Length: 131
Image (cartoon, rainbow, N blue to C red; front, top):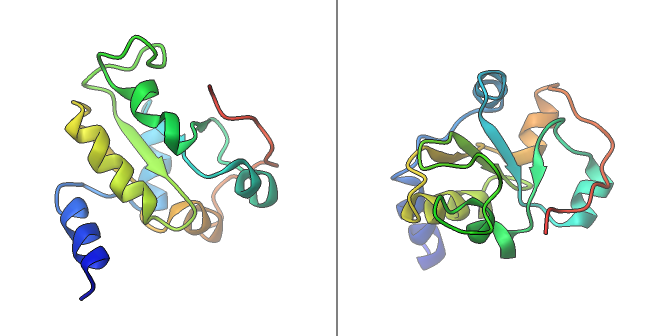
């Protein structure tokens, strides 16, 4: 196993990762879906309706429960599901959010592409990321 695979496995060991279907159900219960994919991917492949695009470089500041720049309503108890293209970068991002105090942060197994392959709703992409 490569060092990066071991690093990813360790990050995932603390996550209760969710399938696309589970993420859709949690979204219906008020979970916040956070899209960390770059703009070019969102524009080319589409977006999950209601998901908030937050570029990875801003993620911690926008979601840390005690950050003055956090998104409105984000608290330490918020259910946050982070996703990327295929579910690798999002695992590391969700682990980082947990370290900042979002104990219910997790990520989407397989990322946006698994969501789309499952036939769940998507919409045309192109929304700019939240600053």
